[in-house]
Image (cartoon, rainbow, N blue to C red; front, side):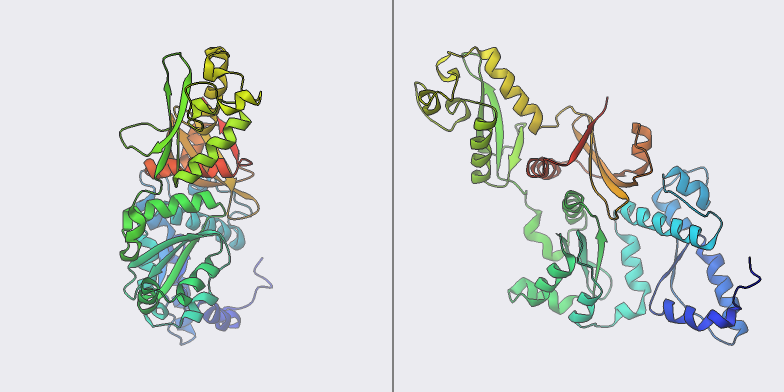
Length: 395
């Protein structure tokens, strides 16, 4: 295999060029870096590059595994490997492993360490230089100041375009960001839902100085239900109340009203029993023959409540065990959002060749995340707007 391979001195210049300003990421990086350093010293060149080791990162981020060898580690995490024990196969497996470790690095210590390791990022680059290195993809972005600290976290369907807006806006916050920014890092997510969930969690955890306005709850109104004296389930849009359990939530009152208006038509519900038409007699739709008369107890409560219950179950994942499958970061990848017993557990990515056929396999690729009112709102709102998203129920 090595008979026709080039000698090290023939590729040394190219190695210097492609690693300039980069951080070397390797599985057992100390070994690879030592080999490179030795070969370059034989040529009289001092090869110095910052490095990150995926063995050390995996031990920190995925503790208590029986083995951290590349083969066993990627197999346990469901990372597909081809051409094992060959340079290209192992390198690609390490790339996929590193991406998963970045997902699991919820404190962003890898990103912040890499900012400090890279001497180029200590300089004050022009905004155009930063934008030039950013992709026009969906994901979460992190704006750093010179010491690597994150000062703003955002989400966008086009990261390059959004950062360009930050750098061209003239409001007071944007000007402060422009003065302090030294680097922008990002995580591609493919899925807007994954980006929304990551952004929400990380703003709460990191508490960047320029995200203060976003720490408030992301919704103001909610959909509630109650049973009236005649046994009919009534629906009502009201101000969100933390003491009550809503069916679903809305960013504002108008969004809630639009939702109710639509479901009245879709599920053949009564305007009076959904709060759209205040009257002591029949609703307006009954006069038009499009309401079956629940407003005046003409339609049996059991019949009417069956449709209301169907609506509630459709728009709430309370007590459900389910996986939401959405876009991934590549053509052959998908994202998975896990909900167990109505509680959001976390998210991860999986290759299309990797079958998610049981909860144990699924949990191995999931990065745990916090379940709170905001995550529930984000997920429910996204599913309302994106009805084509795949949902898998399991026991």
